[in-house]
Amino acid sequence: MAKLFATPSPREQRWIKRFLARETVGGVLLLIAVAAALLAANTDLRTGYQSFLDFHFGLSALNLSVAQWASEGLLAIFFLVAGLELRREFTYGSLQTLRTALLPISAAAIGMLVPALIFVALSGAEHRSAWAIPTATDLAFCLTLLAVAGRGIPSPLRAFLLTLAIADDLGAIIIIALFYSATVVWIALVTALVALAIYGVLQHIGKCPAWLGIPLALIAWYAMYRSGIHATVAGVAIGLLTNPHAREENPSDVESLESFLQPLSVGIALPLFAFTAIGITVSMDSISSLPSDPLARAIVIARVIGKPLGIIGGAWLIARFTRAELNSEITWWDISAVGILAGIGFSVALLVSQISLKADAYQSAASALLLGALISASLATAALFIRGRHHRSRDTAR
Image (cartoon, rainbow, N blue to C red):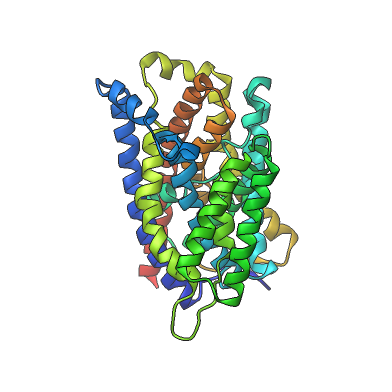
């Protein structure tokens, strides 16, 4: 009988420890960036902060503002790392077989579907096109909170959270590509696909040195941007096409790229994007108006209630209608704690908000995301502390 949340292999455990360490630091930097942006937007620094966001630089064809560079450029690095993680998971990790991939993918899919449906039901017709805002999980924030409050949590549950968040990233990428792209410029799109195809073939045959791979990746990114499809899609495609197999004693291209880019992603790309995206004006009037705002109310309820319900329900359905059973180290209370934790969504949610909403509605959405993240984080901290204490007591009694 298959085990839900199986204990990771030694190789998986080593990778998870390295990944958690980096993501935890990234989560702290992300919190600092959010605090700095809110401080700048709500003090005398406001004018300078806005001028910084609006400052344009780059070549004529890429003369973008700082905020645009953060969204189209820096986030492409984040999604490239997400693509590398997915490629590794599809090859060696918990997504390599249908049996092991079924649970996290199902939990992620239902965990995206339920909050999306709640959002559509509550947000009103004007904002229904922004239905994807409450769907994605913020891995850096979740892992930071897990490290702080989840001492004693079993490793299979940590591995499940990691795989769930990676599957969530894949879902978010697909949603952005399919539902939030402008009118497609086909020549640019074909150029991007050709560059990606060449990169993929060279990676497959093991003949893709950096001097060739980097220009191909940049061409794919630029052409994807010009095509009207969000440039982050090129990032994840490059990650998925990178060769995951080691050659002799050398690390694989996936391992090498991930080792180099992940610190840039969690230490620079995500914090800078958050700094440029979350600079909203916070006042007593804006806070008091959130409960009466259908958009804000829909986001908070979908994230705080819908996301955990979807994840817990998805995992339960797999256990109920397949022959799978829970790993002996964990219980459904542990899964519930992780479901609550996954209600924290920020980076990708801000990106979807930018793409799908007008400026005034974006302010409301960003405020709601902050409030929802605070509520989910508070509930998750309590749940993780209780479950961690339970597991520590059980281990001591053995």
